[in-house]
Length: 433
Image (cartoon, rainbow, N blue to C red; front, side, top):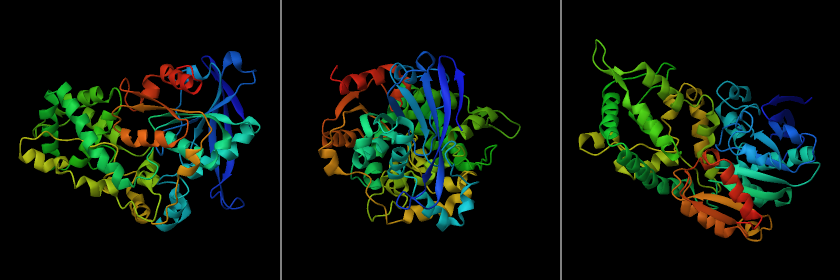
């Protein structure tokens, strides 16, 4: 049963689909997918082509827009849009500390989560597509991890695609997680340096907070153990267009005077726990490194291992000298499963996933080399989340792909730039740029 309702300028319809958990066993267990159909109110009765949006992540449900926000307004000028909650996210059979114990113990949970990567998401889309479009191919817009899924789509089922659009999400076709993070840490250091150049007063503020965390045990109101490594991970913000400014505002009022001496303020702690907690997207922490697994090598907590190669990120060493504290970026670490109450029950499951050696390839270079689907990709000049040289190498490997390389936006350009970004990509695939 579908339910339709309205928001300003749009008609929304909730849609649900049943798909196999394991597409190689179509008669076996199933999972339910949720998607929200969006159409401009004045076009609701028209026969429009479809655009499927694949959210970044992994682990995040599709954007919950109100009306025609961000890029959606531009898309609705000519498309009927499907905002898909990828399996395990949003309303699509969510995978979290509450639901995963239904699978059994950690080993069963880890086996289950192997079905939550890009290959399974693409096969979900191919089950959904004929039920939505009547069999016609659709346009896919993939943001970040959604772009990884789009490249997997071009590899596995290009016949389902009319056009493919990617924003900040062209993955390396063959890099191991170690390669990804070895490229990431210097990139993050550049972003931190740029932040301190913009807000030099934050150098001392960050050192002060880090020193406090090294000498005090702090537990946030939600039960999160707030360590110095957790504080450093707030550098995740620096990959978005407004992130540096948001980090500055967070740091400027961190302390308040108390009878026991300076302490981290309730306001600061409240903001920090909202930024640090994985309660709303635990799948991100569980399978983040698994999205790079494509061979018999385990990911084995790659970001944690590779960090040891970059001693400048060691907070204690930085504070012992006069070096600025370096924040970190889009990395997942084993300590997160000790600090975060939303992840603690899943620590053993995460360990088993990190140790797996049976990952299968996600991309098909031979098929991409003869691609016939029109493809355009926005590549951000110094994207903190996705290594730009990896993206450009992949762009060259996909036949016919056209890139727009820009430093006008950060990784969240499709949100910040909205209609302009989508306009530019559509112009590229239509030879109008």
